[in-house]
Amino acid sequence: MFYGRRAKDEEMETILEDTEVYSCIGDSCIGWMRKDFVADDLLCPMCGNEMTQEIRVLPKI
Ligand SMILES: [Zn+2]
Image (cartoon, rainbow, N blue to C red; front, side):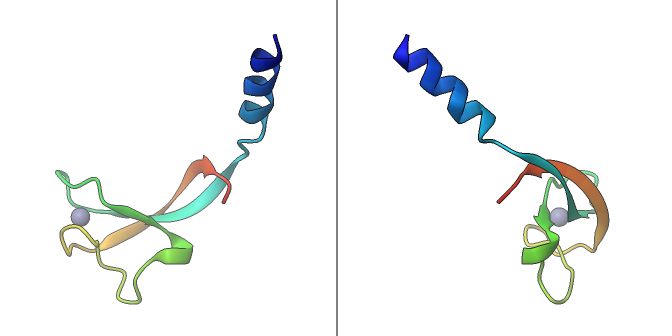
């Protein structure tokens, strides 16, 4: 019973929020970065393509 209560508390601590991210324009690439961590040149860290800004719902950090 204590364990179940604790798991529920941890679940509630995950706060989701709309987050500005840059995602890769490449169809076959899943690369994306949070706006706060994006590279200065706005290029995909995985394939080097350009990235486009979008909003995703992500856990708050
Ligand atoms: Zn990419």
